[in-house]
Every structure is written in structure tokens, then in C-alpha cells.
Image 1 (cartoon, helix red, strand yellow):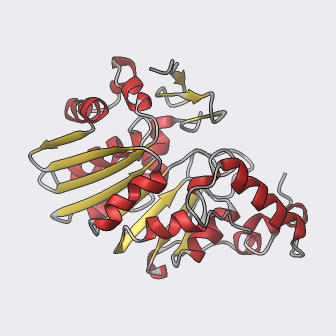
Image 2 (cartoon, rainbow, N blue to C red; image 1 turned 90 degrees about the vertical axis):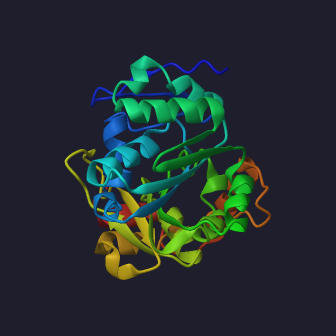
Length: 291
């Protein structure tokens, strides 16, 4: 098993750091806070929890924080809501490493049991909850959900950043993910990247911004992105964000065979950016005084 060392974040909860990807799994400003703010709260999960049934897709399950936060929110509002969850994860040692008293202490006893069972058995079913953890390359495991016509009311999209894990931020992968989004569903991601937003649009979705909350860095302009089929339910992009989509930063990642390596995708992306004649991102930053 990988040697995952818990790292304390500013809200008192812990995250892991991935040597392979060179990034932490969560924001150091607050791992647990991020799970609520940028995912459950961003898609109005409290309101959706009034339904008799909710289906969730957690892309890049990791430590399970986004799934845990969602269950806590839904059960607080509607204890008898039937919850169905599918979670995609590449490395099974991550959820296994996260089910320690140090990391589980932030969740209710019932959610602790769910996280521990999912990490060890990859499946949990009891009363009003059914959850399954699919291990492997998400580009392949999501095919199972498409074949079963799974439609999520909420998709939590939480891979490592586009530069570190470009294979999960391509137009082609978002096209697969979009097939799993219900007509009234919403997708939430922490990324505000113009390339990500363009890829979501190319996949046929409408996009909106996640406005800044109390917890953000001085240079931030959004907490992330929401995507949906219906634009009326989204918080519109600011003028600055709209102009960002007209720069070289908005050139999306591509992976037409859904099998390219990260290096191949990054090389192709860099070549497209170099040959582009649209406005440079640095010019956009200067115009909006973004450091």
C-alpha cells in the first residue's frame, strides 16, 4: 500500500499529498470545507435532498470527502431519501489509507462506516443508501455507467489539476461524463480553467461560475465551475471570465481515442496553443490586472 501521509489543512481536517501528481488531494485552506463549498453547496444539494431519490457520480473519489459531505447534507435534510452513488477512483490505496480515526473523525458514525466499507469492499448497501466504488482508469470505468444508462442528479468532478492529469479534462472524456448527467442535473468542479470550461461547452453543456465564498485566495475570481443542460439554473460568468474563454488558455485538451498518455495530451495541447492566433492569456491578465 502507498505511504500516504496526512497533511493538516486550515480548517483542521486532513488531506493527502500525491508524489505521483505533485499535488494535494484538497485545498490547504480546508479539505472538508472544500467538499461542502465547491461541491454539495455549489449544486444546491440541500434543495435537491427534498426529492425521494438522488443519484450521485463522484469522479475521482480519493479520500471520499465529497461523497461523505453529500451524504451528510442529504441525510440532514431528508433521512429517508434513497441515495445511489457511483464513485470512480484509479488508486484503491487512497481510500484505504484514508479510513483511519484521524481522518474519519470529521464525519458522523454512519458515514464513517460507509467510507470504511467502500474503501475495503468497494460496495455498500444498507437501508436508503447504495454505493459502489469502481477502480481503474475513469475513461474506461465510466463506460459501465453509460451502458447501464445511469443518470446522475449531481456529478462531483474532482481529478488532479488539468496540467497534472490532462486525460480527465479532455473534450472526449467530458462527452462521456455528460452522458451520465440527468436532464435537470448539475456537475460541479473546483476548476475555473478556461480550457476546462471550453471542453464542457464542447461536450454540449452550459456553464456557470461558482461565486467566491468567504474562503479564497486574494488572486481568486471564482471557486470553480458548474455545468448543466439548463443555463437558467446557473450563476452567469463575469465579463472577465467570458473574455478568458477567448484567449489561448481556452484551447481544450483532446484525447480522441480515450487512451492517450498525459504526456501525449500535453504535447498536443502545447502545439495548439503555440500555433493559435487568439489573444494571449498574459494579455488578458494585464487587462484585468490579474497577478
